[in-house]
Length: 67
Image (cartoon, rainbow, N blue to C red; front, top):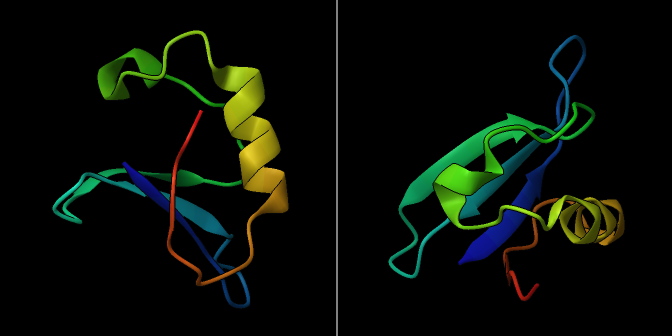
C-alpha cells in the first residue's frame, strides 16, 4: 500500500490518498479529520501510527506505507 499527501488550495483542504500495490486509489480523506473506517483498508487498530505518518509526510511525494 502507498500513501501520498495532496496540498489543497484556497478553500480546498489537504487530502491523503491511500493506493494499493497497482497504484489504484482505495481511500481519499482529509488530512485534518479523525481517521474513520480504517478496517476497510486493513489498518484497524493502527490509527496512532497512521496519524504519525501523515504528520511527517511531504506534499506530493508518493511513498510506501509501512505500519
